Length: 81
Image (tube, rainbow, N blue to C red):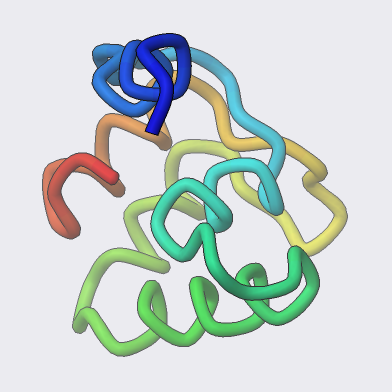
């Protein structure tokens, strides 16, 4: 592995706005974007209160991105990607 690839792999995770597919792919980098997003939603739904907490923080079915506050909730439950 070349040094530049290693630097990217070790970049610190930042709490910021992420596209839904973008964040899902961070957790599941070796599968297609659409599959990662679908499975990521299943992870969120598996947790008893996470989906409800995200909705309370403004998430809707039309949302394209997670806000920094929503990302913080996700990371608090799933850990950093």
